[in-house]
Image (cartoon, rainbow, N blue to C red; front, side):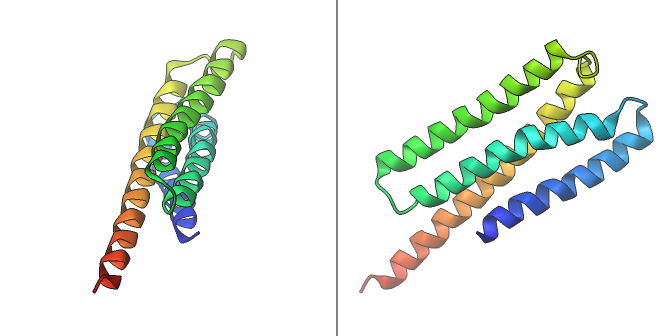
Length: 132
């Protein structure tokens, strides 16, 4: 569960830095847009990370399912809910909102990928140590 904490902490830290920089340069509601984009990206990424962590000791098919399923989950939630907000509310009908969603989607995807790969490398190293 340490990796879940790293994903949450890293994303919140990225949010604090990016909102600080953006708040300095743009007049749009950067805090609102970035906060919603954080939620749209972080929660599916957390679910995908936990799913991948549970699948690491499963069969190759289960690992592939967790990878593809996590990808679909992230895209469906981030793009689906983002589209609903964009088309149904005046407040979010701005291109800056999609910039924030893209920024946080790519950040959480990258961080989650690093965490999953490091977990698999750690497990592979442990397995190699057990071999005679």
